[in-house]
Image (cartoon, rainbow, N blue to C red; front, side):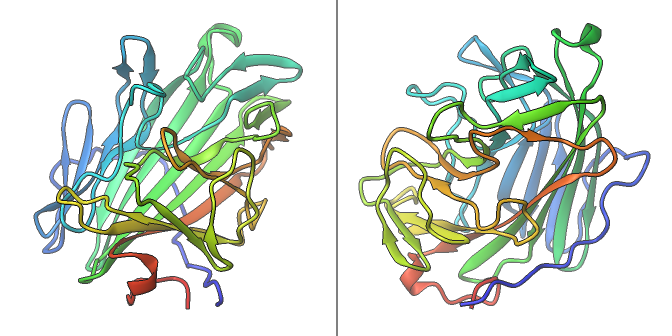
Length: 307
């Protein structure tokens, strides 16, 4: 098997515009007061939570996808489940957020961290639809809530076929002040980065290029891609998602945190050891996600980025 690098257009232009009812024959963006929905051929693809939302009367969260839908329009993700009320669909977050030696925030549970979506732009073409968000990270523990990290995130959805839909994620992080660092949980698990809180039926199966993988407490070295499949459809239909780590991501091939019940699935970045963010360039995280019908064994799709 070989992994294909995907060509992405240059990111973020100055002066983002609003995104009301942008559409073509395939894709349609609809903006509400709280966020943005994407539809393909009239079926929902995802909802982007732009404005802060209070989960379980405690956790103030935004800048994530929920729901993320299957090709049949079934909801794949969960938001604020009872076991981890701060989990939120498809999200990217880190426990350790430091400036110099000072812990200023915990982005996993959104403690002392606010995310201001300062600019957003949607674009539709003949075969794809993209959402670009500029996000400023702020904390009351840093200089009267002045931003200290700028995030630029691009989410691109490609035209689906009968079997699958590809969604590309590119997350760019840049420090706005000196000595900023981020890290995963400060333990041997080191979880943090791009996470998927999806439904977890009893028949959930993990497949990598090395074959079936069993969920463990700690990190798993399973290779650059991993498929998660099971009875995720509303009538118990088999479907799943395959997650790929692009070679441009600094810790490629990233390790995985996998859970069989009651938690999220995570492609780990950077791990327990904090990573310093530069002020003169971006740290770039790039992933591809394939939402598919059936399980991995039955997946045959022109949208696949793995051969």
